[in-house]
Image (cartoon, rainbow, N blue to C red; front, side, top):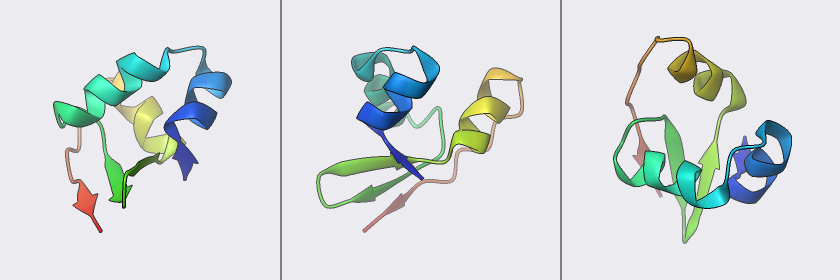
Length: 58
């Protein structure tokens, strides 16, 4: 699991774009407090057309 900032650095996608994908429930994420955690494999699945919008808020 990567934070939005880590995911942004690794993928080259902007922090704000990744955050918007989370807020729109377009990608799988876990919200732990105020942090969004993204599974890199699930993010790749989203961009490859395999959507699975299960999000977990803690």
